[in-house]
Image (cartoon, rainbow, N blue to C red; front, side, top):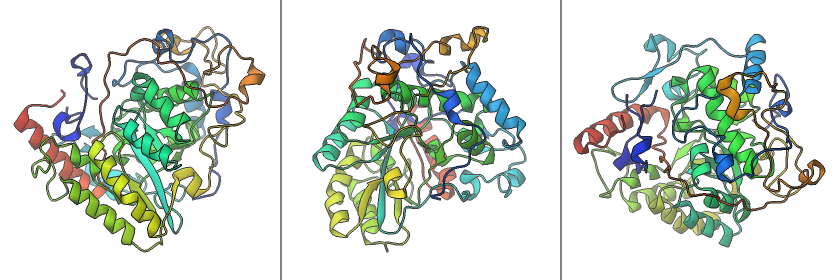
Length: 434
């Protein structure tokens, strides 16, 4: 089964990790997410080797699901809030398809963003008039540092939709996003899979472990937003995101198509048919954004693991400002708090923990998750941690795992063509991860 394309998507994966891939109103929640997040007393120091050992294997779908997360899911399901939709599978081209795809994929009740571009009224796809909602997917990665340097120099904040596996692999880079740029840290799952191909339990684990890493490394903050990898979501997966984890679901209304700049030879019409492949192409995309009417605002798909794309954005930013676009991070621009228990990266934090209420009798598959968690200032009292400032976390021991980048997606109408092209290119150069 196709997982990711190394050369065309710019993936960096250690050989040992090459595994098969299986509006502005307050969001109504079925149960308070506070019951999943609260500080406990005896956790390993965040960033330490012992702390990393409590997480699933990076870049694989987690098999550990803490009992508290499962209980929350079951409560939400019992309330009838999780639609009973089939799990999709990736076809030979790498496109996620349902059983009886022609019927299920296009049904209004399915609300598949991949198949029909469906969004719910409380999903975020556009920014307010005049706002360029700045966000970058797939961090943190080594290439992210150039972006963070630019953001810090320009006193500019962005939303960073981060992959949990990357977070635990590149702690120092993560700390720069949180402490240097005042960036909003948001969820992009643990291992970056097509969401509708995951079972309910797998999706709970993919979201929960990414949130746990963010929570531990930011003084206990709980993210408020998620961007589904590839924009792949339906009514079932979004219900889990919203009702189990209290997240707002964020898509985009414009695509920079910077993902194609990872093709090693620059333009490659096999991997990027009819799209882009040169810096000039992406620059032209930004010129289109700059010249667009201010209504609606722009929510642009960009990536922080693509150095050439970052360079193009750096050149385009002064033009955006000159054209009177208000460039803000998504939560700031759209008017909701970046964290469910804090107003920003500084100031008070209401203690929350994913594993609150888990008993000593939880199953062995959950045992690595049942340990208590701490914040970066783990020696402080609970009262002191309620006002934890942004404190860098030690990276601890070296990490052997390397991150997989994002092939992340074109708009729904482009996804199938893109997957077919990626598969053809991969077959030609022999770089599929199987």
